[in-house]
Length: 158
Image 1 (tube, rainbow, N blue to C red):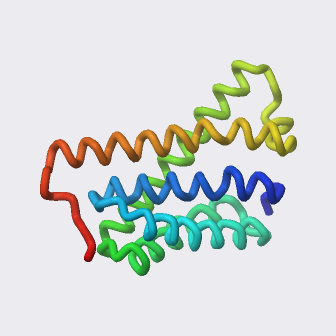
Image 2: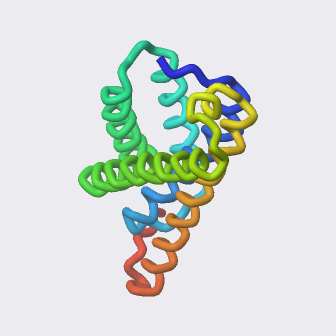
């Protein structure tokens, strides 16, 4: 069970979910529809909150979150199943890699212990924002590339 305070879950967790959903939309070559993105992010975030409160190991936790994101993208965003599964998998792996790299960089630059950062709510919140920004920036760059390479090929929902 991963213990994170409520402030961090709200101020960093939900924006992270929004950035991840934006990334999956871009990977799926879907038009960004903010109402749907925020709805998918909210339902996914609720799943994250529930899973983090359960005594589940991180590996299982990750698989369940990938499947959960896939389901919400399929049901709420109306993305095709296989496309949603690929985007969920790539998006989640990207998030884990970016988070790992950024935290390693922060530890290296500041000299602070990883456990100290994770167990200090305000510090964890501050150190969590760079990954959110990187994921969102990556989502925007992929979206722009999709628009440039395939004008008219961006999938729109009615």
